[in-house]
Each structure stands twice: as C-alpha cells, then as structure tokens.
Length: 428
Image 1: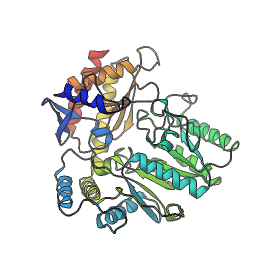
Image 2: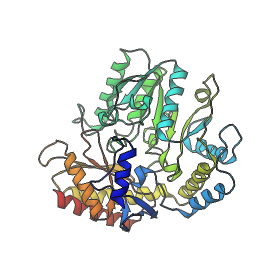
Image 3: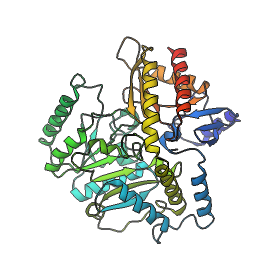
Image 4: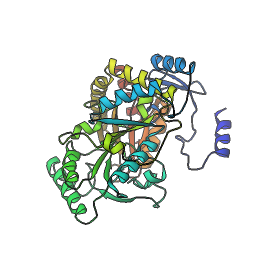
C-alpha cells in the first residue's frame, strides 16, 4: 500500500518535495504524543509535523471545537465580520507584548513573514533587509530571498536586497572562541560597521532560535543589543516566532523575551503550533505599522472560522494546562539526559536548545566536520526503534531536531531518549 502511494506521489508531485526515510511512511492517525503509520506501526512523535502539533495529536478540545464550528460554517473570508477571528486576535494581541497591537491572520508562517516584509518595506520605504546567517523564513519568492541557508534558498533572485548579519549561531563562525559578552559585542560592532556602509534598511528579521538551521541561538540579550543600534537608524525588528512561539522554549512564551531589555519587537510573526495542525499563521505589529498600507487588502483563507476555532481551543488548553511550564520542566530533563548520552558518543558535537526545542549536532568523530550521512542514519535507526525526529542545520544538515508536543510526559521523554541513545550507538 505504501509503495503504491509512493509511486503515485512521484507521478504527480514535484521532485523537490522532500520525503523523510528511504522507505517513506504514511502517517494515518495519532493520539497524544504517538502516531501510527499505514502498516500499523506505532511511533513516539518527537517532531510534531515540524513543530506544528503543539499540544497533542487528536486533542479532544480542539477536535470538538473544529467539529462544532464546521457544523455551523467553515468559511466566509475577511470581507465579513468573523467572531472567532476577532476573539483569537484579541488574545494574541494581548499575549504578544506589543503595544497597541493589530493582528493579521494568514495560512502559514511563510505567508506571515511575507506580510511582515511587505509591512516593513512599505513603512520604511526601503527594500533592504537585514537577516541572520543560517536563517530560514519560508518558501515564497520574498522569503527564500532572505533565507541565509543555501539548502533552502533555491534562487538568488529576489524583490529585496538582503544583507546578512553575524550572531545566530553561537558555536560556529569567527566569534566562536569569545565569551558570551564578547560575542555580543563583536556582533554589535559588525552590525554597526555594516550600517555605516549602506542606506538604512527597512528591518532586521531574526528567529530567536533558528529552526531549520538546527535549533541554534545566540546568547540571551543579543537582539536587545541589536535593537539599540537599529533604533538609532529607525530600522524595525521583526521577530520570526513561527517555531519559537507559544511557550516551546520553556523559559519564555515568545523567543524574543530572552532579548527583552529594549522592549518587544516592532513586528512579530507566528504560525505552526497555534493551530495544532490547522493552517494558521499571522502577523502582530503596532497599529501605525500594520495600518501603513494605502490600498485595500483581504485574506480569502486567513482567519477562516474553522481554523480560528481550533486556534482558540488550542491556545486555551495550552494556557490552562501550563504547557510552557511543562516544556521547561520536561525539556530540561530531556536535554540533560541527551547530554549524558552525548558524552559517551564521539560523533555528537553538541546538544543544544531550550525547553522542548532541542538540537543534537553530529560530526565525524575526532573532527569538527559535519556528518549528514550520520544524521540520516540516526533518523532511520530512530524510526526503526519507534521514534520520529527531524533533522536540519545550515552546516550540511547534520543536526537532529527534537520538538515533541508540549504535553510530553517525563516517562515519554525518557523513552524517547533511550531510543535515540540506541540509534546513536547502532550507527556510530
């Protein structure tokens, strides 16, 4: 059955549409932190549909909200008043930390970042964007043009002029040997030097923790230090929270809060986890920025009633069950467990991350050279052991990405760590 579906997939879908595993699997259903494939195999899910199943698979509260809303009306577009959209926007605006916030809903993180770029360039009347090296911001024409990761940027053509800044990766690059304070100072000096050579850009867009880049991040406070410099030039700060939002990092509800000394970002983008699998993205910005467009616009599918009902139910569950706190507690235990495993494996360069957003970078033993073949082998071995994980990393895709639903239990964290430990042992 699966081989037949794979053949049909290849006949009608693009060659560049990536599939995991030598023998790709079809996931048919899930419950809690587990999913099942078409052959009946059960897996502990440590990737959540690319950080999208935020609370749990088949969460009854979300399922009920979607079913009830679908029984009334699925969709009307933004041309009509939409109570679920207004209610979710009110909650997101309040949680964002941005004063006088306005919210625009999209259908994906790509579209959210695309909208943020349109707002910033219109507001600032500049098509110049600062972005971080090793970054990823989506697959649209504008967002691949600002993505600082060669593996995910198929064209150099872009409506924007992009300048790349140091700082998104703490443990590689020219400043790796500096302590955290010196690292921040060096990155700030680099930014100042860059701004001295160009016309003032529209915005800096940055992921507080780089997702596709392998869950790398700078020292806390880097973007606050950047913000001080940016503000002198009127440059906006866009925080791409598509993967870091909603408490996944444990210590904070938003990733930007690790860099909050000089206030919230001017623009915040979100997606993925808020819908728990439903297609929701969005942008939050101060009213003066959000309202800077001088032409009409709508969204046909952004903010549609059935997805908004899912988002409201999912966000309510997340807050009422303190899943941010669970991410901090269980994620902290999981990181320490994986670091203990890594200490025994010469091919593991680093275990990094925070909360339930954890990267395990693999290298060829005895070197600092990325080992993408090992990452692929561990991915396969983990699946054989009943665990689904992801991979990524700007340095040749050699990082394992671990991001389970935020309701993960301590027992499930231990189970997943044990499977991953065996996968590392069997492949190295």
